[in-house]
Length: 291
Image 1 (cartoon, rainbow, N blue to C red):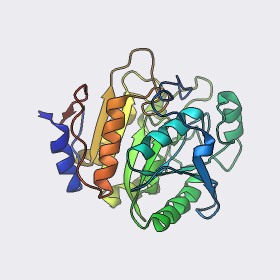
Image 2 (tube, rainbow, N blue to C red):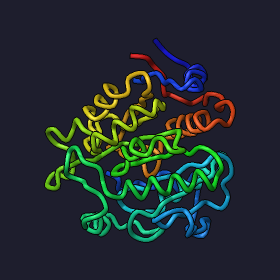
Image 3 (spheres, rainbow, N blue to C red):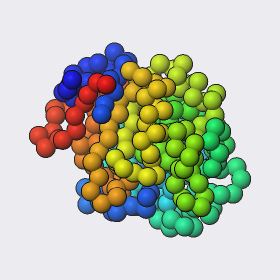
Image 4 (cartoon, helix red, strand yellow):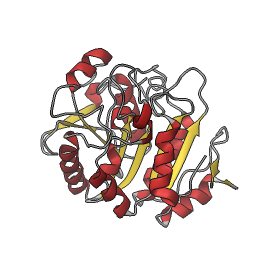
C-alpha cells in the first residue's frame, strides 16, 4: 500500500518507521547551497577529532560524516543546505583538510592503520570510538538529541553511534566493506554493513528508527546490503531507493536528489523533536510503501 509522507512521519513520531520501497562527486549540490570553508568555525572542545560547525545553523544538532574524498566542496555544500533548513550542523574531519576533493590521495591516506577498515566483513573501524565521543559532546553542547548522517564509506557508521544522545540515523549509500581490486563490494561483502556484531547489537537494542537511501543499480551500495538492513531492523527501517539516470551514487551530496534531501530533513526534525514535517513537495516522486 502507498503511504503519504505526512502519514509516515506521524508514525515516526511514535518511534516506528515503515519500510519503503562513486563518492567522486558530480557537483550537483553546489548550485543549491554554495558554501565555503569560511562558513564554518572550528571547535576544539567537541572531541578527539577536529569538528567544524556551520555558522549559520540553528536548531536540532546533526553530525554529518563526510565521504571518501574528504570534507569536499560537495559535502560542505550539503552541510550548508542542512543548516538552511533549520539544523545545527557539525562536520568531524575524518581525514585530509577542509575543502579538499582529492579522491585517490584521500583513499591512500585512509588505508593507514587506525582509521577505516574497508575490506573486512564483520569488524568496525577504529574511528567509530572517536565519533562516539564527538556525538556525546555535541549532544551536551546542543543540550539535546543528535542526528547522524553517514555517506559512502561512513554510510553505516550512524548505526554504531545510536544511543548516548544520538536519536536519529540517516544511512546514505553504505559502501563498506569492498574489494580493493574491484573497488566495490563483491561476494559476501555485498550482504554485510562493515560493522562489528557488537555495534549492530547496539543499534538493534536502541529501538531507534532508521532511514536509509541509495540509488538503484548502484554497484557500490548493492541491493543485498539493503536486504540485510530490512532483515535486521524490520519495521524500524525506512528505505528510499531512487531511480538512477547516469550511474549516480551520492544521494545527498555530489548526486543530490532533492526529494531524498527533503525526506532526510523531515525525518531528522521529527526524530529530534522539532515539530511537524514540511508539506509534501509538489514535484516529489518518492513513494512511501510498506512491504
